Length: 162
Image (cartoon, rainbow, N blue to C red; front, side, top):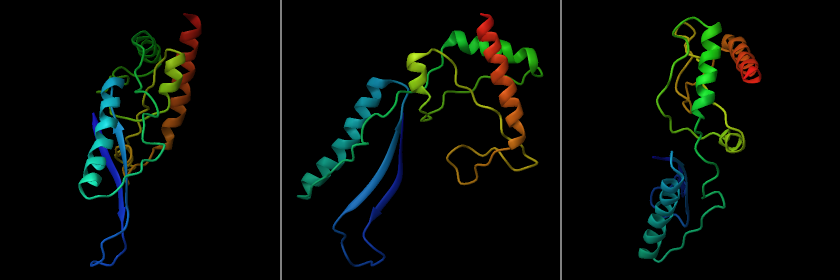
């Protein structure tokens, strides 16, 4: 599980004034819904206890809850996709990647329709592309878009043939 504190804002540029309010934004990433729910409770509990200790109050946004489930690929469709792509791509192109604490709304599709979510390789050292997601240096090598369309079409044909 990861907790990212993405933004903290309080006060002004004046260094000797205690601000009246403070806001912060966080994101939680997890693989297990039960553990995610526990984490949300903990993230709320800490500021609530701190506020009580200082005779303050805390308000949470309506977004301070689990907004989507983790993306978990169906093993059957992952194998089908890998087999389909290995037919059209050079050997070693299709590879597994470690679990990633990503937040992706695609989980809502996978709740209803078993499938597979995959990454399209965008690293191109010569162009300087391929930095990690959610990074100020992130950029895409647009030349891989054709490969993405071809891969999606090949997977769809294999799925229909099944």
